[in-house]
Length: 449
Ligand SMILES: *Cc1c(COP(=O)(O)O)cnc(C)c1O
Image (cartoon, rainbow, N blue to C red):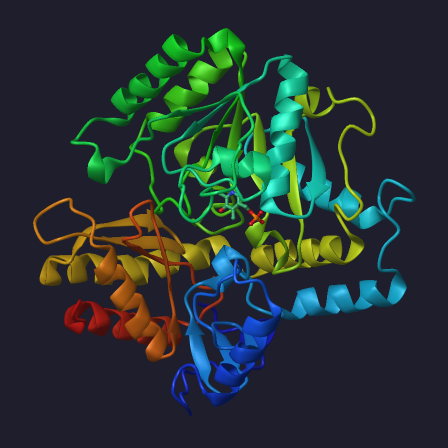
């Protein structure tokens, strides 16, 4: 939502439909894909991308779609953001890989320094870089277990932490993430989240007491290595816990020598209007996991946290061939510089100021939406049968489908599949965002289930 267009993209920032969605070229390519790509990998909207930038995705049929998804909260700085393109181009010409564990390079160190400075808390920190959000969460568990010499890991209802063997076990939802993929690793315990819309008015403190009591009774605080929580849950439905919940959980961790891990893979890097969602909650995690928004789309992730915890691991205990690849590090430094120069925290807050009142008014006027929530550029509507808490997944799916047909990319999420989430690139222009919301509103008003 900045006028400095040349710092964002040269692509026209417009919705333009020249064929049905998906168009004939996308449909043909989808046939090829089905014969070549595993059916286990699905796509929300099978229009095939040709170019993308700012708030638009241009497909191979020449349609220009409004992007309210950012490839799942990744391209916060926009697609092919100019600084990212320049930094990666320069790096790719210099060297593409040495492996940081063989002969290291400066950009990895610089990314670690940036992460140490930007993550919550002024204590001494260290970082380690990996490739995906799942890998970061896995490594946070390894680090917490080594440091504490304990094994138990506590996660929450509605949690999403990834799809690898360990992280799918940390993830709550069976379908599609876990079904048929067991057995799962042990020493993982799940406790209730604070979910204000479905919590019958209990406070954040009371919800924390409920979770803490379960930890105490069923595991014992002295046995727990780590408590892992998304400060605003992502795939689980953009659930923001009630005030006081996270501080109480964090205090319990400190009192019991438990490593408090904030999984900021989706909520980090200006997405919620702060560098990290934990900032808003006033909690200082022991470890923070990051990925998605960090590098404008190049794959890199990180664990950042207290030096004594991060340094407790023996040499060569952490790592990986590609972790902190030089192209990804160049992209991360350029993406973070873009966030700073364009002030994307302010941009995220402007998105909230523009979109949230419209979504709230829509909820009131249609009766189809039980709850509007989220912060910054991480906003959601939970669809329910009017006047009840009963999830209405069919309505969410139908609204998403209607938006797609009109060239607006939105995503659903939630344990009950009844949430539409908005994750626009934080650089999206105000006019384009408003047009996307017009179409979304029209769909909510008119779509029949
Ligand atoms: C997406 C996500 C992950 C997993 O990240 P991948 O890069 O897909 O492995 C972990 N935690 C949260 C909160 C996420 O949103």
